[in-house]
Image 1 (cartoon, rainbow, N blue to C red):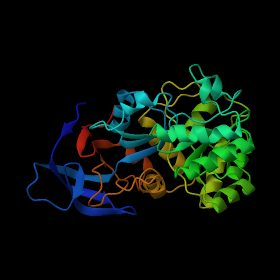
Image 2 (cartoon, rainbow, N blue to C red):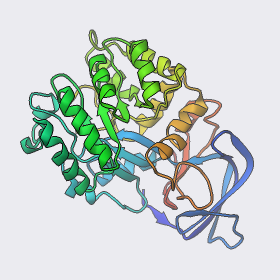
Image 3 (cartoon, rainbow, N blue to C red):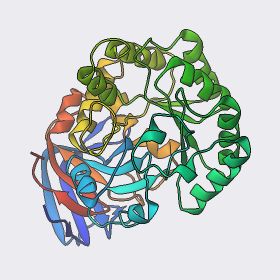
Length: 362
């Protein structure tokens, strides 16, 4: 679908999500990709046909490789993607700033150590392995110098030991960046929390998180990106111990009860090396549905992919429908606050004011 730039647009006859509820009888206008007050001299007036207008969705864990990935995300309402591990930032830089497709941020290469599963992925540069505490500062400085928006570390066994992990977190915070930890076991959760990471992505399937770990996440202000769709895909691909999806779901229930902030992320990656590949695009709908099944309300699920990641990742120019913010918008036919699956009924999507999907994605 070809993106079409329109300078000034008015969308009328829509219910507008204000961050807490749908406001009836709304009109939204944008000019040159930025939301403005109501305009009487629009180039185009769109009848929203009593649809529901929300901020564009933010997928907080993806691995993008091409403009095709970004286009697929956009056609499913994802207007911002947070990449969690890019091997070649020179290639990634060509994906940034695309017009009419999903906007993207990245961690650059993740930190890991020799012997880890990720270090054995074909093509992983050996010179990027962090083997000593004194290498942590160099690793972080290099990633920041390459343009990483945040850092990522793989915290699994085998992987970086506690001293190296502590040094990576300290160096990242000294550079004014957040650090996200990949962790899929209770042991790795404990190590990451001891080091002071900002965000933990994934949840264990071997056992539910203990009450102690959940309490630690709350007290330390750590954020969860559970990627339930990835955990489910992994369990379906390789059923049986230690892959029990119900343990992942129970952990999210406990995190939600403890009021740990939960963000929507899918781990979409068409070139992934692990079990249970997750596609770009439709998986965000599945993730939101799984989050609701795990105890979030539809409102909380929508906020987990809009206002909440906007605030946590410092993306102040998006995540809500307000004058002065980016015209990242998704129009759906039915109210997702009543039934989260209604988010699938995509009618139109705008990325920075450019329409990228007029019809529901196939």
